[in-house]
Amino acid sequence: MRQKLSVLLFFIIFTLSTFATVFDDFVYYVDLQTMYESDDPYLKILGGLLKRWETGLSFYVDNLQLSNLELFPDDETTLKILKDLDPYFYLEPTQLFEKALREYPDSIIINSMYLFFNFQYWQNSLDPSVAKEIFEYSEKIERLVGEKTPFTVYYQAQILSKSKIYNDPQKAYNDLKEIYLTYSYDKKIIESLVEVSFQINNYEIIKDLYNTYMGLKGTDSQTLLYFSKIFHNMGETEKSKEIALSLIPVSKDSSILSETYEFLGDIETNYEKRIEYYQKALSLDKENGRIMSKLGLTYYNWDKKEYAQLARYFLNGAESRNYITEETEKALRELRSRVVFEIFLKYLLPLLLGVAFALWLLYYLDKKRKIKEHNRIFKEQNNK
Image 1 (cartoon, one colour):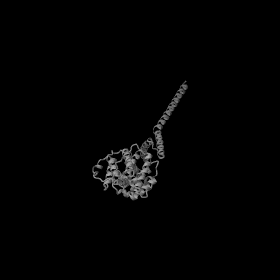
Image 2 (image 1 turned 90 degrees about the vertical axis):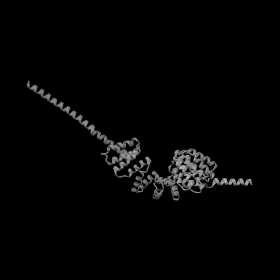
Image 3 (image 1 turned 60 degrees about the horizontal axis):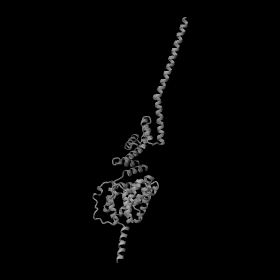
Image 4 (image 1 turned 180 degrees about the vertical axis):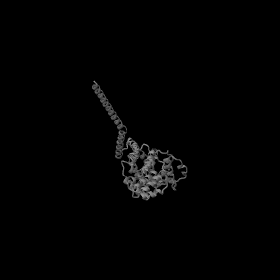
């Protein structure tokens, strides 16, 4: 009897540590805000706790119902670790979930949390050994779940599109596209797919991505800027400009705003408006040599005589910040040669003419004096 109870107890423990638990739907989401706003109470708990960790804002956990939950042992371990986390720190939770894996090696949620925090570490370190581990745990989670998930595909795609060692943006695109066609509700999947689409110049489903994305709650400024640039590359200039202009009143990121103004300057055909956009971009990123170069070249191409001084000022500024292109180098050579010529005309030529006139005057006066002296001597000799 005791032996049968032991076998039954072992089977129960094995079942709990192997099969799905209440937090396992975590792998079908990447965007934490979407999880937090979910009607699923367990997803909402995970989303709230992770948003508090990500932002440091306590209101994400103020209204969470954390009592009277029916949890499996690995869920309880996950909840305990997340509740006690200090915001922003990722090394400690990585270590805690790694330790939990010894007890629950086949737990989907424990493996997922270990991957989640390990990815935060990779983002800050770009350690290739961590990237390798992320691939390994992604594949392990997919084996446990029985399919690819938005969670695993997203983190693999991030490394494939940004790592120098594992760089394969085309594979990242293919995997993200495949998962998007099944799970189109996740903002992070769309944002990553748009970024990679821009990276590899593949715009085959960009309009569908845009329409889906704009129907979701909350948009990312960088993603909208990617959309704007992509539509411009597709020849839809008005749509591109419309998206870029819509970013200006809502974006709070000065670097995104600067890049947006710079892009608007790039696509503007009117010189006066282009200069206005570049000036706004430069005011938000004062040491940007690339924007200085564009501003200088715009003045140069608009009217190299009228705006020569402004063109030279900004092009010299770009050069001093180690931003120089063949076009700016050529413009600077011409502008500097003009300066030399202008200095010659304004200062050296008058000086040379003055010296020449003075020498001529001295010669003239000396000659006149000699003639006068000669005439005087001639008269004196005649008088004798």
